[in-house]
Image (tube, rainbow, N blue to C red; front, side):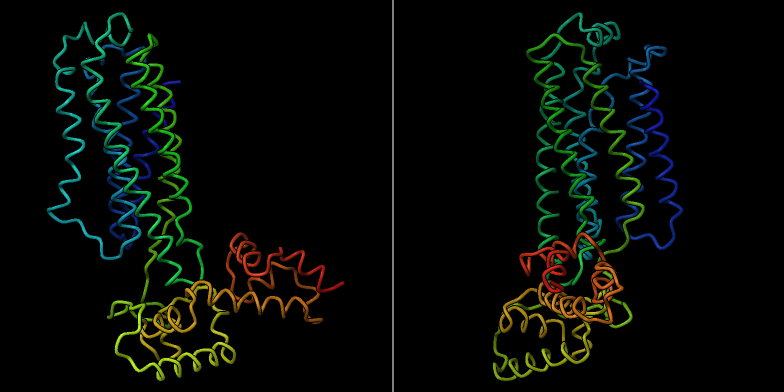
Length: 371
C-alpha cells in the first residue's frame, strides 16, 4: 500500500511542474505551485518512512509534523488569493510560517529521542504519548483555526459574487468548498489520531497510513482542479474595464429622482437590448452598456430595485426561457438548448435558478405550458 504514497508524491511534483510552466500565471497559480511541491515532499517522505523495506529511515520520524499544518495554511492562503484580486504576499505574509514553526519546536523532544526509542514507538512497544501528543495538539489547533478561516473566506466570496456576476460556473469555487469539506474529514482523522495515542494501544503507523491515503486523494483534487481554475476577477473583458471606484450600495447625496430615472432607463434597456443573453455578463459589463458607473448601477440594484445583480439578470433569463419554450418555432429545441440561448451556461445552475424563481422544474413547466 505504501507505493500509493510514492505515486501521490510524484503526481504532486508533476502538477507542480505543470503549474510552474503555465503561461500567464497569477498569484494563486504560484501559491498552488509551492503547495504541490510541499505535498509531493510530504507524500514521498511518508513513503520513505512507512515502507517496510527501508524502516531504517525512521531516524527521520516526526519530520513531517509541521507539514501537516502547512497544508491547511496553504489552503487558506490559496483561497484568499483566488477570491481577493487585491491579495498580495508581503513581508507580513511570513507570519503564515508561524504555525509550522510552532509545531516543529514542540516536536523537538521527539526529535531528540534515541533511534531505538523511535523504533519502539513505531512498533507501539513503549508509550511516549506525552512527548508526541504536544505537536499533535498544535496540529489540531492550527488545522482548526485555518480551516475556519478558509471557510469564512469562501463563504464571503460566494456571497459577494452575486453582486458582480450573473453566473456561477467557474466563479463559485464549488470544488474548493468540497475540498474544504474533505479537509474537515482530515481534521477529524487527526483528532482520532490524538485520541488513539492517548487512550488506545493500536499501531500508530496504521493510523498514519489512513491519513496519507486521504492526502493522496486530496492531492489529485487540488492539482487537477487548481490547474483548471482560471482567474475569477477579470475586468478587462470585451465590454468592461477594471472599476476605479469602490462599489457603493447606499444612496448618499445623490439626487433620488436622477437615480430613479436611471433605474427606469435600465429597465427599458433590459427589455430592448436584452444584455442578459450574454452568458458571461458582469456588473461592470452592464454598467458600461447602460452608461453608468459600477457604483451607480449597484446603488440602483440594491436601493431601487431591491435585488442582487445575480438575481436581477437571471430573473430576466427565466422570463425569456418561459417565453421561448412556448414559442411554436422552438418546439424542436431541447430545454437545455433554449436555456443556453437565453443566457444560462450551466445545466445545474439553470435548473436551480428556474426552480427558485418559479417553484417548478423546467420539465414541469414545459409539460404544463404545452398541455
